[in-house]
Image (cartoon, rainbow, N blue to C red; front, side, top):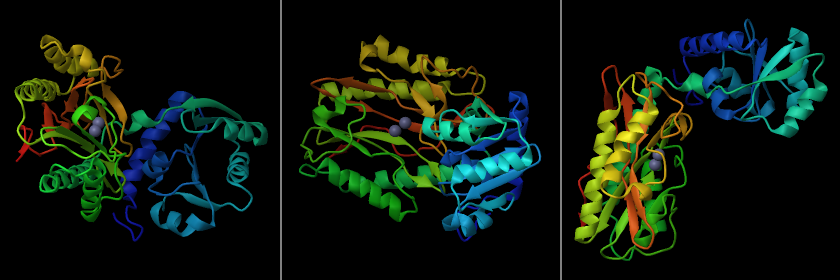
Length: 369
Ligand code: ZN
Ligand code: ZN
C-alpha cells in the first residue's frame, strides 16, 4: 500500500473509514462534512499534505487542493474526485457545495479557524454550516496497519534509548542528549520528533514538561527523557529516568514507588475498564506512599496520527470502557520542587484479554557509572 509518495493507503482501508464516517454523518443529520484538519485529511483520504479540504457526503468524496499538491493527491487519494483550485480554497469548496446541492454541512469545530468559518458562512449559497463535529473518536480503535506503524515508531524510540545510554555522562548538556536522541531516531526512519524532546536533569526533573536546555548534567543527578518517533504519520511516546552515577537512598526509594505505580497501571489496562479506573490504580499507589499531591497530571493518553488522542487515562477521562486495539500510555511521575523528579512511560496496546506493553526498554533503575 505504499506509493512513491510514501504512505498512500490501501483503497479497502479508506473505503472502510469512509463507511464509518458516513454512518456518523447520517447520525448527525448532516448532508456532508468539510474536513480541513491535516491528520483527518490523511486518515480519511490517504493524502498527506496541507492547504486542502475534503468534502464527503453519502455518495461523493471530493478533495480540493492546489497545483502544488495535485499530482500527490492523485496518487495518494485515488478514491477522491480532485478539484484543483485557482481562485482560493474556500471559494472552490463552496462551489462544490453549490453543485452538489447540500443544505446542512458539518465541519470540524476544533480545527476550522473562526475567520475561515465566517468567510465560508458568507460564501455559502443557501447552505448552513451548522453541524460542528469532532472526528477524533472515529480514530480511537486502530487498524492492523496503524498498529504496525505505531510498533515501528516505538521500536525506533527504544533503539534511541539504548544508544543514549552510551552517550550520557557528567558534563554533557541536556540539549546534546536531546539532539542525539532525535538524530538517532531520524537515522532509523523517524520523520521527525513526535514532540519537543524533554530532557530534565537534577532539580529540573520537577518540571513535568522540562524541555532540554543548555544545562550540563552533573554526577548524581536523575535525567528524565521523554521522547518519541513518527513513522508514516504515527507517533510513539516513551519516558525513562536514569541516574548519572550512583543513586542515593531517596532517589532509589522514590524510583521504586513510581515504578510500582507504573506496573500497577499497566496491569490494570484491559478491555471494559474505564479511563478513570486505570488512573486511580496507579494514583492510589502514589497516594499511599505520600506522593499523591506530587503527581499532578493524568496517567496517560492515547496516540496515533497525533501525539495526544482519546481515550485518556485520568480522573476526568470520558472513556467508560477501553476496547481492543486502542492504545494508551501509562506514565506516572513524582515531581518534588527543589529536589527533582522522575517519570516512567510505556505505550500499551489493549488486547482482547488485557494490555500488551509495546515499549521494551528496561525499567530497572539504570546507573551510568
Ligand atoms: Zn511522553
Ligand atoms: Zn505521553
